[in-house]
Amino acid sequence: MSAYGDALRVGEARERYFARSGLGIGGYSERWVVLRAGPLPIRFPNRPGRVRAVKLHDLHHVATSYDTSWTGEAEIGAWEIAAGCGRHLWAWWLNLGAFVIGLVIAPGRTFRAFVRGRHATSLYRTEGEFREELLTWRVGELRDRLGLRTPSRGATSRDRAWFACWVAIGLVYALAPGILLASLLRGACSG
Image 1 (cartoon, one colour):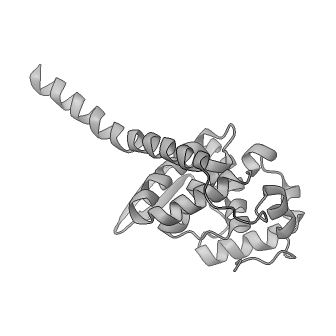
Image 2 (cartoon, rainbow, N blue to C red):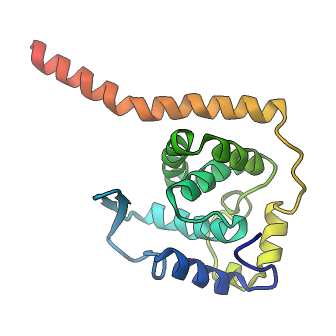
Image 3 (cartoon, rainbow, N blue to C red):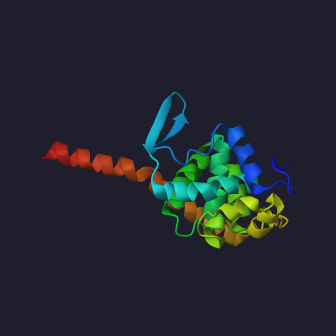
């Protein structure tokens, strides 16, 4: 069941989404982003490219009804990767991190969200940039435009192949910092 009814305006649904998730007004104007990973907060600069991507990302949360739990973020990350992030490099980067986490904590749900995204499209691709006009659409219209009303056909062999490809990319993404650090330490210790 959807968290946001089809007749609701996207702007009103987004406000409900912010209230449910405790995001205030989306944090678009904050200087820093704070992610909670257990007791440790992870902070990083709220760059303009990230803000541009997150404004569309938040509307995808409304359309898909994926929540902002770790599993929900993994699902929306997998969905957005499969539906396409267009020129939004921040979206690709952040979604890949969420996708990798999803492979560990909820692989089945991550796979299903990926397949759902393969048979849909994203605002990154269709709109390119956030516009206030998007908030005047009805949620049902947003879902129609993203192809979210198409009945699920199940995963095709192409869906599975693309998922395997993204799993490989995700492994490189997850392992690269450790490999780089080990290489740097080995070089520092041997020289």
